[in-house]
Amino acid sequence: MEKQTIISGFQQVDSSEYEYLIQFLENVAAYPIVKESLELQIKLLNLKPGEHVLDVGCGIGIQALEMAKQVNPTGKVTGTDISSVMIEFAKSKASDSDLPLDFFVAEADTQPFPDQTFDAVRTERVLMYIKDTQKVLKEFKRLLKPGGRLVIFDLHWDGTLLSHKDKALTRRIIHYVTDHLPNGNVGTDIYFHLKNNGFKNVEVKPYAYFGNDEILLKIVEKAYIGILQKGISDGVFTETEINNWWKSLYEDVEAGTFYISFPGLIGYGTND
Ligand SMILES: C[S@@+](CC[C@H](N)C(=O)[O-])C[C@H]1O[C@@H](n2cnc3c(N)ncnc32)[C@H](O)[C@@H]1O
Image 1 (cartoon, rainbow, N blue to C red):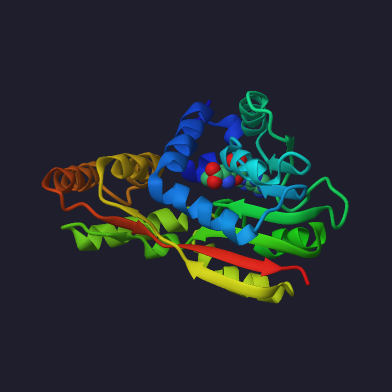
Image 2: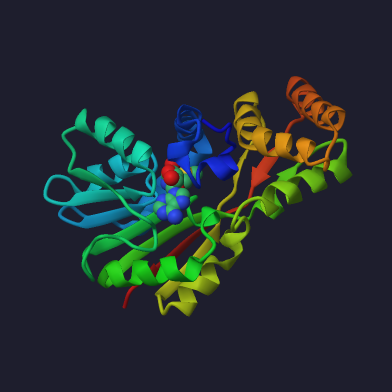
């Protein structure tokens, strides 16, 4: 199995070191600011018992499970993901609960459901892995009932704010990571895509994931490490440069001066 990074790994989970990716999703979902973002998204979705919700690129189903609590007992949350490993994991997690959930393998832009099936559609940190956002948004519109609500969370990786002594290298690293995602700055275009696809009541709120502790630095390391290894093999960075870069960040954690923020955006629109 190929050694993967979260960048290439989430585009092809099934042929990657998926245990690493599953662990990564669990770590991210447990981080307090990420949990808060989910609460805000659920509030925006304004879910009611009896409604049918679709979570696209649902990963291991953590957020689908939270949403199912809102639509329980007469509604349902359906999660879809391109990865059958993710879907099997989500199914087994869901089987431990009595909540109304089902899961299917599907491409974000080709969902196996009839027109106007869902009261609400949600997707988080998925569009960054897909080049053709337009096709996905069109699919969301097709799937929503009239008046249905859409919530999208995604990032603008180029805008990552990371306090580091070596500012020039940090800038190169942030750009390098962004450039290796199919759509690393898609967060910036969420407003455009919602408007361009005829969604109404469109709102896009900045919502940064940020923190200053070692837990977050370890998540960042998991996210970056594989891609920076590629950068070293491609001769873009030297090993010493990268090792010193991490060392400095861990020293900042020790000194209590580490700080990072990932600019995320939460988009909302209705299918009126
Ligand atoms: C970073 S994970 C996010 C998972 C989940 N939304 C969360 O917030 O924990 C990205 C997910 O998108 C899925 N994915 C990537 N490309 C996809 C595509 N073209 N269609 C559907 N899912 C896709 C991956 O398999 C992975 O589960």
